[in-house]
Image (cartoon, rainbow, N blue to C red; front, side, top):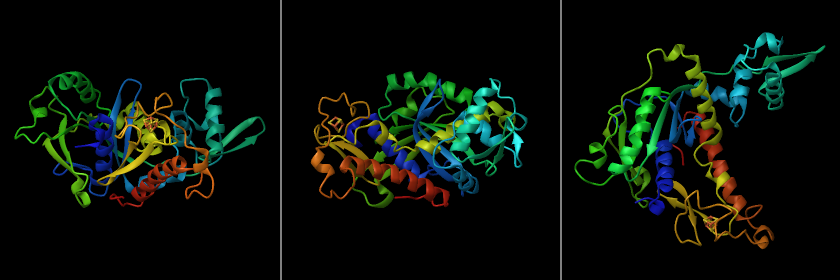
Length: 343
Ligand code: SF4
């Protein structure tokens, strides 16, 4: 089973499994040296995926670190990717963005404030220079839709979305992750899922040692849906880069920014090799939606928890946030160093 038997709990475990074990056994998978970044609930304005796996060039990913741990949004990417090696007026250096230059100027100031380009004033002109070449670090993007209970109606609801995912081909590969039923033919195989979409069936055992806590079985292999002219499609490249940048900045533990670790009932519990949220008041894992200020059981940490040398500065809630934040940084660094399997 998985924490709380909810899609949220399932999703966190799938993310953790991907972080330690991607690619699934016997899939075509990334090139063997690929570094892997995992994020959740990311997408475009039109489509949001449950889990995103970014397969990265390790040297490129290491070079990306020069631009800081936060994501570069589309405006910053426009400046950083096109910043020249030598000082130049920003309007000479950057391609016309298709919107007024004053917005580019604002992005230049923001980029310089973050230290991702250099800027200086010459007369009434602002000149920029790059701090480093922006690397080509994204190899492939894989989208995973998590549906632990993939019955006929869930499959019908998903089918149209997945067909569109395959057709738009923003991701190179699309999977559905579901909970294994133990039947000789997983029901997901009998449902109306597009043939280009892979199916992964998961079973979890929180107490199994090592990597045995999560078993991912490939029930159906996906087709690579990357278009033939992908290299020449600049719009697709840019959108994917924006997506990858968001994954770089957010990771999958970003729930610590939206849930309420500052509630006295918020706990983190170990499940196999994952850390998942647990609510002491509800005596079960809570969902991301219910763990909010509007929760009827919400109680702020008592002030006394934040004093008298509590081992974690700022109280346990701050400590949990720092822990999740720290693990996100740590995973990024370890991944950058070429170590995929992380604790
Ligand atoms: S009581 Fe509500 S806000 Fe507090 S941890 Fe539980 S679900 Fe979250």
